[in-house]
Length: 470
Image (spheres, rainbow, N blue to C red):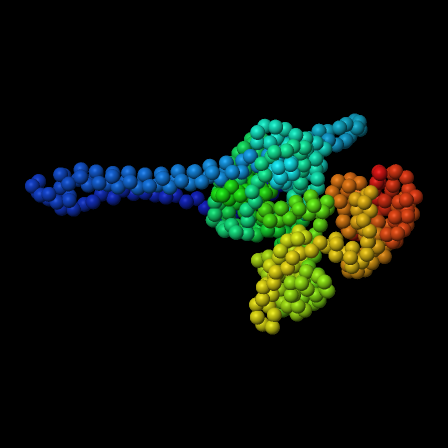
C-alpha cells in the first residue's frame, strides 16, 4: 500500500448541545379540560410516543433498506476479489561483510477479470516479488505468474492456472457522482473478505504517486470508505456490485485509514489490462498533434496526417481548454495527459475554434506503433524489444542523445530485455562493446554475440550498461 503523510491544520471539533424546554403557562382550574391540564398531559404523551414509534419504524426501514443494498452489492462482487501474498528475496552484506539472503513478504488484493485466471492488481503490490500466491474466495490457493506491469499507472496483471473463476462485472467510474455510496473490498492487514462502506469524496485527484511529472494527468477517485494496507489492488464497487475502481493508495499520518483513500478508475485499469494481455506490452497514448503554448493558452500548432487528431477533426489553431474533463493549463500538461491515456481509449477534448466552443472526441492510438511507422523500426522478438534508429525526430528535442545509436520504443513485459532492465527511451550505443548506430548494425552485432551480451546504453544524461542473457 502506498501511503503518504499529510499535516492537517485547522482541525475543528464540533459539539452539539441539546436543551430541554418546559412549557410554562397559566394553570387552569382542575375542572378545566385544557391542553395544559393534568388530564390532557397523558393523552398528549401517548400521541407523542406513537409519533416517535412511527418515525423510528420508518427510519429503521430506511436503514435496513440501505443495509440490504450493501449486502446485495457485496455478494455480487465478493467472489471476484482475491487475496495476494508476495515474497521477495535479495542478497545483502551483513555486519561482517558476509553475503546473506534476506527474505521479505507482503500482502495485497486483486480483482478477477476472466474465468480462466487473469487478475488485476496494483503494480506496487507485486513490485520486486520473486513469488506470488493468490488465494481465491473459496480458499483455493495458486501460484501466480506476472503477465506484465505498468509502474506509471500502477496496474499489474497476474495469471493463475485455474478455471471456473468468477469474473468481476465492470461499471463506469465516469458515471459515478461525488456523494454516491461505494464499498471497498479487499484484504486489509491480511483480513480477507473485508467490506467497508463510504461515499465518493472527490474525482480526478492528482497525487503524483509515481512521479510529480504525471500528477496533473492522474484521475484518482477519492473515497472515505476505509482503505488500509492490504487493500491495494482490491475493488471499489457501486451499489450494483460493479467495479468502478482499483483501490491503490491512502494518505495517512499513522499508516491506517483516516478517510482519505484513492482508487484508479476502472476505465484506465481495464485499458491497461487490454494493452498488456492483448498487445503484450505497456504502451502510451498518441494523438498526433504538435502543441504551441503561448500567452493566450494552449493551441494546436500542427495536426499530423493519418493521426487520431486528424480523424477526430482537430484543426490547426484550435485552442485547447479541457482534456478528459480537466482544464488544460500548459502544453506540457496536455502532452503528459495524452501519454497517460492508454491506446484504444476515447478522449474528450474541448477546444475553442473561431471563438466558438467545440467538443472533439478522439480515439487515442499507440505511441509505439506511431513511432515505428513514422521512423521505421524492428521488433526483435527474441529479446522482447522494439527499436528504431535514433534520430532527432524520434528522440525529440533536448534529449542529448541524437544520433548515438538505437532507440528503444517498447519493451515486452517479462521478456529478456525487460528482465535485464531495459526500459522505453533507452538508447543502445554498443553491443558487446561494438558501437551500433542503426537497427541493422544492432541486429548484426547480436548475431555475432554469445548467449551473454553486454549492452551499453544511455538513459537521459547517464551512461551505463546491462547484461542480457539469452
